[in-house]
Length: 68
Image (cartoon, rainbow, N blue to C red):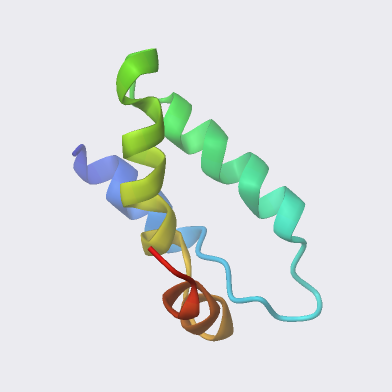
């Protein structure tokens, strides 16, 4: 994984606060993943790996409470 992508992830984490828009966050998430140049076959696997990294706070707790 490119170090710049990890930096972008760290600056765009979703916290699930009232003023945060989850749809805007998902759009940003897909845009950042799109910069990786991954194949269509690997796309879903990359999303599943990276999505939890984009979450912090209440959003991370919610994500961890969901079934695998």
